[in-house]
Length: 164
Image (cartoon, rainbow, N blue to C red; front, side):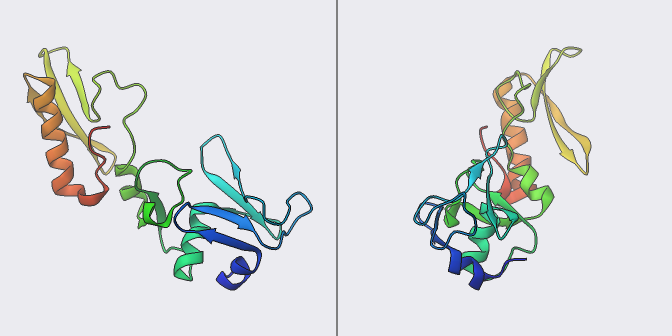
């Protein structure tokens, strides 16, 4: 496991841009003063140091705070390539999931809301411990959306993703 000292020996980190730059390359594949990291299909950036691959957001946390996070790291804006320290926060796995965007299969346009054909109303649902929790049936899409967001803000706090 890499230490903060070793990390600072080989890379510099700009907390305002979230970008790492090689000071002392650990491989022949990279050059001094070049940008570090590879973006994977998941849009997360990984950096290999001493033949071990690390997530750039976890390295940013180590660089600034002196230790790896105890939990996961959540990208507040939902962009996994944005590793500015102001965009990163420690989160449990569950909290990290609260901050996800609406699924691509969503047809209502709002996370947690779908049309209930049987009643011809809009239904708001959240997931609690992997079980759906019914929040109600509503005449309008907007009412269902408000019910979903209100519940999430009350129960999930700062990790609630609003409007997406």
